Image (cartoon, rainbow, N blue to C red; front, side, top):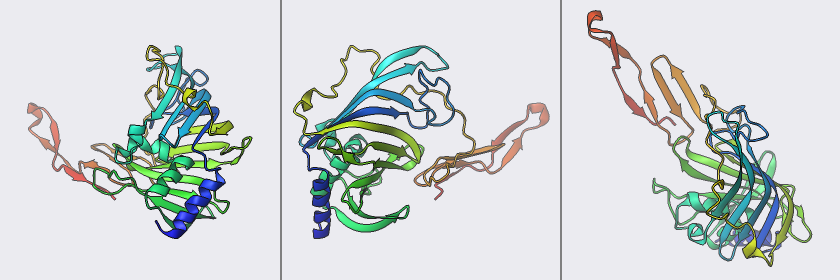
Length: 315
């Protein structure tokens, strides 16, 4: 790791109080990707990722020594297919020490490493580099590093943390493979940093995936190095039938042209009388039917088939 990057990491850890663990709580909301989070308060889907599902009594624990992460909260879910039956549930997600191993699949561990605390731990241990970049008119020092595990393409994953002039991590971004989006951009922003009774934490956390809102937290309390760490945000009992880590997958409104404003990674669909293509910014596949020919006579029945079928990878 270059000396300037080491200094940036150390200064950022110091600005956050250099904790070995932290817990924060408040309220949150989530949604399954490319779905909507219809719930007891908003039973009708308004569009993709609208509404998001509320999570009450939200608590998260991050243990950097293990390392591990757990978060939980209370939900009210409705059934699929237009059901109006409301069922209380429990949100729970975790990154276990085994999943946090950076030689393991990136999709399982990134939820720990896109937090400011997890990111800095990874930066300190994985030869981070430092550069300067302007985002939305603001200058940042950008720390970048890669986990040991590689993508299926054999390319290295990348994770970038944006440190402001007060040595606070405001943004963390990475990419992960998705069946629809290809290399999907995952961005977590951390704003309203303040001292919660001696513990630094952001008041607002927003995570987007592919440009869409995915997970949000309004933080009302935080504590560094809690003495009761092991008893916080525990997994629900396995006998709890209503426990769920993600909202029910509901039928979403059909999207016929989908580039979301301001998102380079957004899904884009096109329909023609004889063809349909799905493409995103990267690593996507398009099936193209350019011309149809009639086969057989009217008496034998009118059938059609594509005269050419081509697989494309639009860039």
